[in-house]
Structures are given as structure tokens and as C-alpha cells.
Image (cartoon, rainbow, N blue to C red; front, side, top):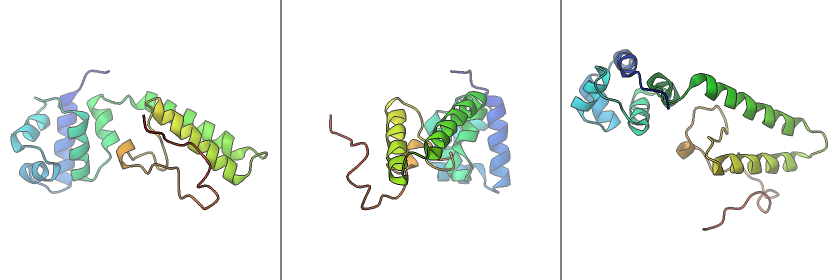
Length: 155
């Protein structure tokens, strides 16, 4: 994992907080973190966890991914390359003329299930959601889809 550039992150957070017209105390309350802790993050004295960054991003109504990149938790270039590979795989599946629409959706569900099982983020839409915020399927299921696709079993 890359080392955290907390000074740059802190400056960015302060700028975003001011743009949102929030006091330090208001943001701390909204994010569920202590006022002194948030102050230390803004001053570059603390290295926040991904969970804290997610809470702060939600309170500021900005992308948590942006904060992860700023903090050095996510490598923007690597993440972009991974997204391009995933998009290319999806495009090939969706463009296959030998599959009907139901088969394509089932295949995408299986692909997403395997990616999630292997610890990769599942991109089901705009790419801004975290795994915890995403629905468990790739979209609305129809009556025809209910009995097909990957099944999750209890371990």
C-alpha cells in the first residue's frame, strides 16, 4: 500500500468542508468522528482509516474514492486500468450475438459474483458505489431470471 500523504489530504478536506460551508464541529458531528480527531486529519497529523474517510466523504457528499486516492489508499492509475479491463469484459459479453439477453445478464451476474468472491470491487453502475452500498444483483430480476444465475450457499 502506498504511504499516506496526509498533509495533502488534510488540505483537500479543509477545502471541501469550507466549500460545503460546514464548521469543523458540524462536519465532525455529521461524519460521526470527534472534533479534535478531524482537526488533526485536516492538519496532517493523523492518518485516517478508509472507514473514517468514507464517513467524512458521505458527510461532505463527495466520492469516498476521491478521498482514498488523495490518501494514497487507492492508486488512481491502477484502479482505472482495472475498470477498463472490467468494462472490456462486459462489452464483449454484451456484444456477443450468439447469446440472448437473459443469458448475457446471467453471465454478467456470474462474472460479478466471481470478482466479488476474489476480493475485487463489483462495478454495477457508475463506479462510485462501495460494495456495501451496492445491490446484490446486477439489476432488477424478472420472473424468467429468478431460477438462473449464481446461487449463494451458506458455509
